[in-house]
Structures are given as structure tokens and as C-alpha cells.
Length: 572
Image 1 (cartoon, rainbow, N blue to C red):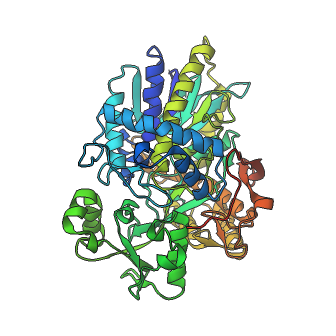
Image 2 (cartoon, rainbow, N blue to C red):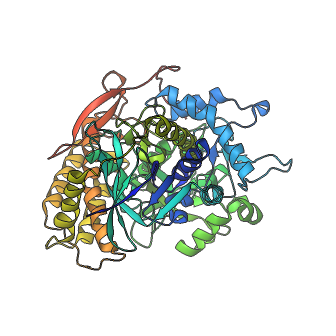
Image 3 (tube, one colour):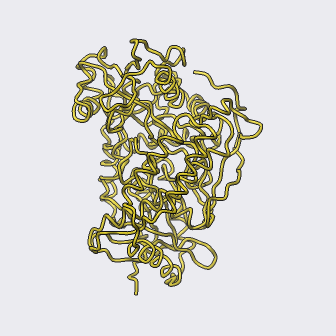
């Protein structure tokens, strides 16, 4: 008999979106029981790693305006963003900035006492609201402290969710999960849920993501019959340090940092003469790879080609005050003090524009289930996200979905929730018989490395048909190998077991990325096909949807919402 726990709203994931959703739900109806379920401790969520800022129009009297932010977001998306969703983001985020301020967020300040903002790539005005270079950490601490003031929020830390449960009508009814501390298998039941499980950046070996940032949540939704949207659009941030891939915030370039090649040139003058290093991320990353391909890169001691980010001209005091975290990262992980010398950088997997298909409200295709943050794809970022819009998205749709879920429960709360025994039994068989008690020959960790190395090699900044076909063929071969087994048979804290379940999800979601990249025969935003180098609005101004198939994903198309701006050529 599987133990059962009942709540009113289940929030899966404890990053910025999850915590904001919990606070919103708890504040909407204090009689509801809100559960935040996470496979890590709250302050170990990957949101703590966000560095540079949160985009918002705060001071229109100084020259900025919301229409400019909307247009910059749509242009940055290479016109694949749903424009009504971009409008919703821009209109709602100033409230969130001031709300965090009231809750104690230590925003950096100007000399006149107002909240400070810095330049970020693709924007027409300095609107990245920052807290030194640790906006994610401070934002998470502020939200976590605030959530502890609500008696109706309960945290389930280190619980690994494995599947979504539904009733006979297909509505959300909860999840199955393993309490990692004990190894016990549970049903967590609720009439409403919000997926806030983050992105899938650990599909790649060279990545800014925490090792916990695997696509478990995306895979749960996918296996439950929901579509994953636009998964071929993977953002490569221009400045990951070598060899670790740890992020150097775009704020470093916002503060005036230069990208230089082996001839000492600021090469972005050639690729984006107006914006230079502050063009959109896809433009800068492509320029960097092009410089390397044409022989103007440096060779890192690890053997990897790279370029350099030069901050030395900013001055020691400025770096210490505004980029102290980056200086510390450089010293610890590259042995370089950015005050004194340039640091080696290379484009690195940083964000997934795709995710669980939702509408403008964050509602998924499953009644009673919403999604927010990077796990969701409400299409606000289209084919390329502008920096500082991701933390903004987490806050805005965390609040929206939290409130909607709470109101839904108030009017749809069932008198009792079925035990759903057949679904639970099938999930037990899948994970325990299919994985835990498997007898594979291949080391699953080697297989994971082979998968992520394949993604690095075959579906990176530049792509073409042959590369993608080779990558898909390799992935299919890896899936067929005998790797599903868990050597550690302990019950408590069996991370070997959860790691192998993560690999199972990685394989399915990686296939969707590859297949989406194959069928999109154009170049748009972060998806750059060398065999189809131009954007094709006639055939591909549309979203990709991937639905679960027993053998492989089933792809179809979904229209883009164009409410304000017709697509034009994108120049920086």
C-alpha cells in the first residue's frame, strides 16, 4: 500500500517561480494547504545562480517606456514570441520589483536612492534591475523568508517526483514521489498543481546549469500527454568560463566589458555595429563561434577554443562594487583576477526557450495544472530570450499561476480524491522494475556523458541536416543500450537511483530537441541552420509542439500570436 498525502495546491519546484507561486496561492486563500515539493533544499534551487538582473521599466519619466520593452522582447525573440504574452510580462513586472523591495530585497541603489538598473543585451534602455551580481540568490532569499511567514505553506524538501496523476476525465489529481530521506514511495494528491521545475540545461555537457537541472518535470508532463513547445530553441550564453561553464553575467558586458579575439580586436563591431557586445545573446554567440572558426580564437589550456572577456579597463573599485561575485568566480574557477587580466570565455548552454505548452495565463492542456518559469513555454521568449527577462517571467507567472490555482481549488475542490491505484501501480513498475531492479551492462553515468557530449557536438550554436541526423542516430543507439540499472541498493538517499531516472528523462527530451531542430528548416533566433541560413516566415512563423509517442515524439505546429508588430529583419 502506497502512503498518501493530500494538499490543496501542489507546487513542483522551489525556485523563483515556485516560491512566488506558493506565496501567491497562500495569500489568495489562507485556508488552503499549499505544498512546495522539490528534489533539492529550497536554497539549492538553480534560481540562486541568476546573476545579472530582472528587466523592468521603472522610470518612464527618465526616458524608458513599456512599449519599448515590449518591442525589444518581440524583436529579441526573432518575432516568434506571442506578442500578447510579451505585453503581459512588461505590464506586470514593475509591480514585482517593488513588491520584492517591500519584502526586503536588497536591490542595488543609485546615488539618489532609487533602485539601480544596468544595460543588458538587446534592450533600448538600461532596465536590468540588479542586486550586485547576485540577483537570483537575493531574490530567492527574499521569497523564501517571505514564504515562511505563511502558516499554510509546507515544504517537502528532497522529494523526487516521478509522474503526474490524473482522474478519469484527465484532470490533474497529484503526483507520485520518492521521499529521498527514507526512500519511501508516496502519492501526493491535490486538485490543483503548478509545474515550476526549471529548464533542461543538463542536456549539454558544457552548461551553466546546476547538475540537478535535468528535465524531470518536462518529462513528467510529456509522458502525461501534454505538449512540449519550441524545444529546439536552446540559448547559448556568450560568456561561460572555462573549463567549468560557470556563467559570467551579461551584466559584465552591461557594465562595459569587451569581447576580444586573438588579434586584440573588439570583433563585435563587425557583427553588431550599433549594439556591439550588447546585441542579443544569439547574435553574440554566433559571432564568437564564427571568430573561432575563422582562426581568431585563443586555445585554452584544456584544449578548447575560446575568446576573452576584458574587464580590466572598468577599474578595481567598480568591479568590486558591481561585479564582486564574478571576480570571485574567476579567481576560484579559472585562477584569473578579472581586475588584472582578461578571462577565457566560450558560448555555453544557458536557457531553454521551450517548455510545457501553456496559454497566456500559464494554464497547461491539463485541467487543474499550470506551469511557470523556465519549465513553462507561454511563448514570451520566442526563438531567443533577452537577458533579465527570465527572472521577470518567473515572478510574473509565479504570481499569476499561484492565484489562479488557489481560486480554482476554491470552486473545484472535490469532497474526496480517488486513490488512483492503477496509475500508481504502473509508475511503481516503471521505476522499480524497469530501472531500480534493472540489470544493464553499461555504466549509466558514461551513457549520460555520451548523450550530453552528443548534444554539444551535434545541436549547438550552428546546426545543419547531417549533424542533426547523426546526433539523432547516436541518441537512438544510446537509448537501446543496456544501461537501466542501479548499483546502489540502499533505500535512504539513493542518489544513484534518482540519477538514473534523470538520465531516462534526458534521453526523451534530448530527442525532442533534435527532432524539432531537424524539422525547422530555417534560421531563427537561437536556432541557426547553416543549410537554411535565413528566416522563413512563410513556412516557419509558428511554434513546434511535441507530443508523446511510444517510439518517438509526434510533432505538429501551433500559431504565433501577433497583435502589435509584423515581423521585420532583425538588426543590432
